[in-house]
Length: 192
Image (cartoon, rainbow, N blue to C red; front, side, top):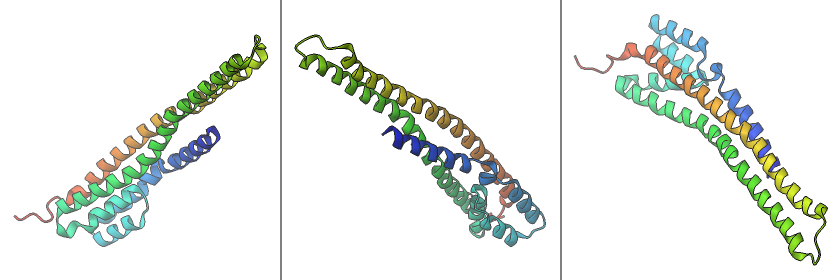
């Protein structure tokens, strides 16, 4: 079980670390080109560049630009829905890392109980006083499983916290950036 958890943890850590890079969530090149295209009133090109970008920001901007014909509120709703969906994808990986951090000590505790039961069975099945070496096998297994569970849980919890904070910050920056870029369309669809 610990080997499986270790592989899963390592894979999730690497995948989340790769996804939590600024250029995967909030690429500055897209911000600059999108803003330039908006300033030059090349709205279709801005939409196409956002649509072609696979980052979180690109998907959100493309969703908003795609709904601008229905009005600014429709665009904001589309951007919020897309942002929530993209954020959920990132949060799922973090949830699995947290799950590994939570389950690992429990599996270690299960091994501890199993090792102690094995030691007590040696005592119960022996007509004489058992040798310390016979008892040590079960106690050793109990302590090793606890130790391995903690070795896995501590880094998983730390990585979860660090990555969650990083992703929260980047998602907040995406929200601010999209508001700044799309704010110029606030009057679209208003009757006046």
